[in-house]
Image 1 (tube, rainbow, N blue to C red):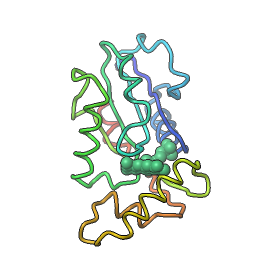
Image 2 (tube, protein in one colour):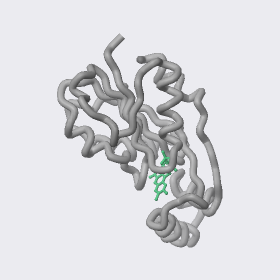
Image 3 (cartoon, helix red, strand yellow):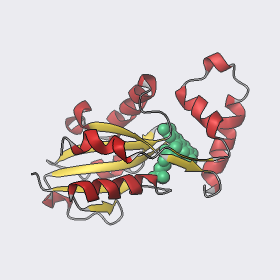
Image 4 (cartoon, rainbow, N blue to C red):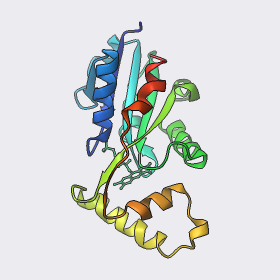
Length: 173
Ligand SMILES: Cc1cc2nc3c(=O)[nH]c(=O)nc-3n(C[C@H](O)[C@H](O)[C@H](O)COP(=O)(O)O)c2cc1C
């Protein structure tokens, strides 16, 4: 087994929950991106990051410190990971966040997270308010998966975290 570490970047806790469960299942140590040090000591890094505006939290800065290690990227977002258009969008963003030699589609996974407007920070609340008022005026047939989920969950507390969806990741580790 490769000497591995799980590093997570989570704002509201759902990515952290997935990271801790993956750590329990696999026995691989897990730390937050702020605690991560000596990453050169590892052969494989499993980076789990929350999605905000299509980008993986902290990935760009973190990936710049990765040298020869294998990098697995796991995103956690509200949009259904089965939606092909959204996956292409997110993967294109990942491509722009990490060096080309680290980009490997077989090592990218997508999980579904959670949202709770009662604990959301002010900046994010304002971003969502702006998005919501724009989307609410759009014709329904023009809405993509991301727009639909913003409208459906606006102002609510929703939790799509499903630890069973970690299984395909566990099987490659
Ligand atoms: C301002 C804002 C932007 C977001 N953008 C996206 C997005 O582009 N795609 C997505 O799937 N989810 C998006 N989300 C939902 C978060 O990814 C989701 O809440 C995730 O579970 C957060 O992870 P965390 O709990 O580890 O912080 C967004 C949430 C907020 C508040």
